[in-house]
Length: 372
Ligand SMILES: [Zn+2]
Image 1 (cartoon, rainbow, N blue to C red):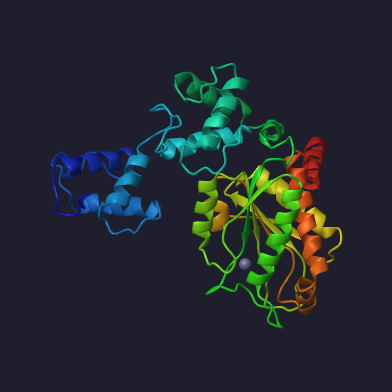
Image 2 (tube, rainbow, N blue to C red):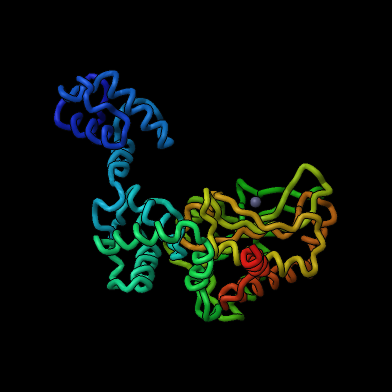
């Protein structure tokens, strides 16, 4: 599209100004508005809008800023929302997803894209509230969402119980799982241990073993990359989305400047007040399994919004089974026995996840909730 900047005027400038007014950045009584002139005030409004949206604040309206302005002026309830190709985008979709997630109808990341998970969550919501389950958010569904959101605001436990319905059950057979060995060379070896072992090599070895175990259990396994291939995390996320897998297991290793740091970490997606219930469950299952025999100092499950976790449309768990920078653990990572044990732990945890078994951490949280 054409760029609009200071000095321009006309119909398009009027449109930009009316969206800035609607989004609260420009005063509608400004003389620039009545003359549809892109002057200093309009420029300042554009800059602060860009700044708030994480865009380059240059005061020029190009394609990206225009798209953000269009998204911003879509307030919740002003248009019907439904699944289509290309998907509907906007702040109203993000608001819908936030409300559905809060109610326990999990539709994933609150990113403003109406995807298949959003449609399924809408249907589930409609079914639960006696509406026609067509996956289309029209007047009745909007009204119900607004009403229920008000009622349920202070009862997060309902959300916890609802979440169980959305979590997978029925076993691992036939599930499409992507295994993602971290890094890849050239040029990226990942972290390197004191005796020269590379994270990339270990990740590939574990990935092979995990794949064998999962295939034995009946899963359909794909890899994010070939051996020795290098891909950015964004490309890995893109491949996972394209292949429509139901889970991504990414393998990395911990590293630290302190050679004494030891132990395993599992990461799941978390951002703001949204925690992926899927990621959280499988991360806990896998860490619990690894902890059975691995007596590292630091065994933890942690939320994160790394690229791979953030840009994928399915649950992702990042498993880091040991510290490659710790000489003892580096030696473990050279032993087939330890690698096989890690692979088995990942496969057992994944199997529990697909059978719908709750993790110990979830049970503990629920118990705490009852006691309160
Ligand atoms: Zn790594």
